[in-house]
Image (cartoon, rainbow, N blue to C red; front, side, top):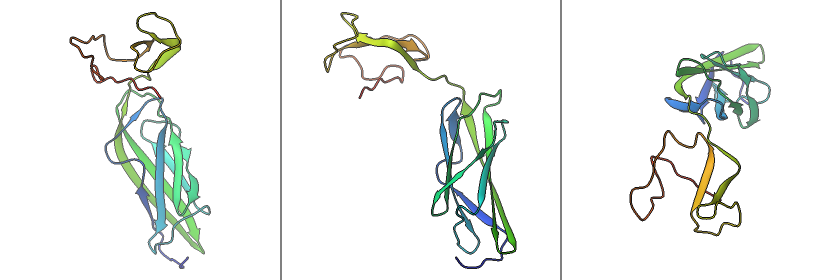
Length: 169
C-alpha cells in the first residue's frame, strides 16, 4: 500500500442502493467497499460500523477481503417507515487517523413474513399431504400468505393471483 496522509476514507455501498426497501424481521445484507483517498483498500486493520436512524442496534461489519466489508441487519419494526443507514469506517495509516461516513436513505416495509404450517401443502382434491405428483393442483395452508382472499375467475388457472405466486423446488 502507498503511504497516504489523507484523513479521509471513501465508502461505496455494494449491496444497498438509495431508496432501498428492507422488510422488518428479514435479514438485509449490508456490504461496502472502503478505500482511502490514495486508493488503498482498507482491510482487517480498520473498523466499519453501521448505525440506523430507527434506533435498531448498530452492527460491526466483517472484512471479507479486498477492502470489502459485510454484515447482516435484521430490521426491527418501528413506527416510522423511513430509515437512514449510516456507515462509518476508521483506520490508521502510520500516525494518520482516517475516517469516513456515508448515509443511505431507504424505507422499512412492515409486511409480515409468509409462513406455511407443518403439513400445510396438500393435494387439492384429496386433502392429503403426500404423495403430490408434479403438475398437481395443491392447497397451501398458513399465515400471511396474501393481503386478502381471492379466487380465480376463469380457466386455465393463472400462475399468479393478486400478485402472489407460489414456487416449489
